[in-house]
Image 1 (cartoon, rainbow, N blue to C red):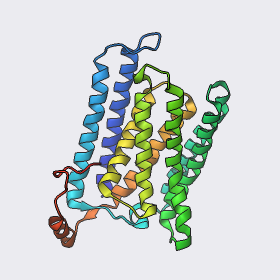
Image 2 (image 1 turned 180 degrees about the horizontal axis):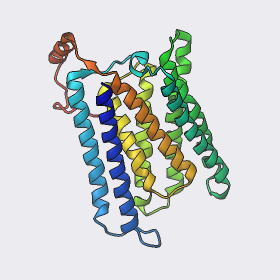
Image 3 (image 1 turned 45 degrees about the vertical axis):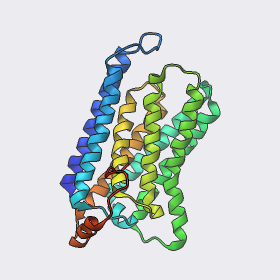
Image 4 (image 1 turned 120 degrees about the vertical axis):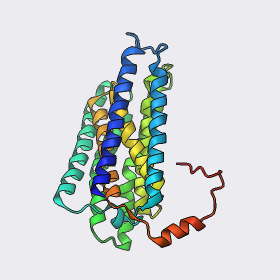
Length: 280
């Protein structure tokens, strides 16, 4: 499964590289010197490409989980023992902490000083909580520790929920929708991705939805890097995407062949009420 996980990771990162390139072309060709967005073919290409990537990811995940099963237990699904994984966890956490610090330091010249300081503070907290959250998958979890584990998984969700509020306040009177649309879509996607990742701590895991939102979050977090924003914010988006990449890779390495009982249970399962289309 190591090869399959690596292949899938490269595919998602490559899609993100194309996404950031197309978004960069849109910013270069569709916007004028005044920051206004005019008619451009890239105003169609970018959203179409995003939809295509979402469809392809959904289809690939569906095909994979038709024959393979993903563990739903917290340690069995996210276990990542070893110094190499520990180094990656804390490196990505440190990058997000650095982004949070830069956001706080640069907030004095911005109009939404309090919001930016809150975002920076939550980024620092998330940078600490994420390595602890993944690291806890390598140890025995006692019943009284479950609440703390859930709080660790909640921190990044709160960060991007607050970021949505910031985007609303910052762009309430901005008539150039394309100037903030990709960021809003990315923040929403990252919030859902970390929500699905936290589901392992809460004991509420849906494998197809979890893998989809993790991988789509990786793609969107790279695509949004083409936009012009502060270095601190760019670091937070980058680190969030890499955190999801690490979590996605760990999950994919835990895929296993379905047992005959699991295959039989799926055949006996009732048909979905939505005509067979599972919403992600």
